[in-house]
Length: 214
Image (cartoon, rainbow, N blue to C red):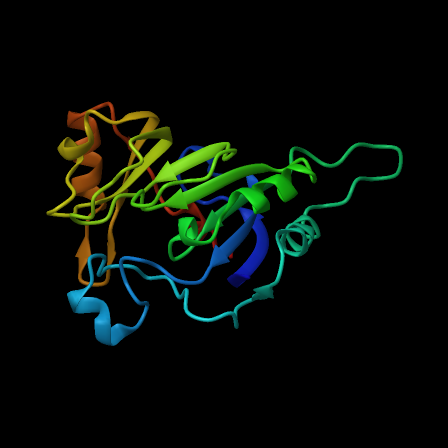
């Protein structure tokens, strides 16, 4: 059984794949925060701004099999025009919450039958199944990160317990800093300054919020 908060077709808003059309599949649940405000202060990750509780979001629901969920994800991709191939390479981003709690080999195999390229946005604390094409790790506080290599490390900045120097030995193709969004602070300048002083790191902005894309 897969529990999905929401699914929708949009443009990736962050990191190295920003601007790329994608189907987003947000799973329910996380291992670093319950998602309930009463638990925020004592949680490992206490700055999350995402609702991942329940299955009541856009196109959310419970799916009894990998095939059922894969078929639903594939239904969001623009269909091919008569006499033409499918528009672009189908691309799905699994996010959460923590998608590694639910994403498994069966679902990956089912999506490959639809020729999907598969991405995950994970906190890096859980073992990942084989077959994921794009691994984006976003460390949170002092949680132990066990996924130390992939395509993209995207660190929300600043985090006193997860500063960039902690991850200098990790093996990723891209290293991004993304300013932490807080109503009473603007961390963008500090993030820019750090990237300028440490050019291994690149700036990631939430372009979907800047442009008003869902």
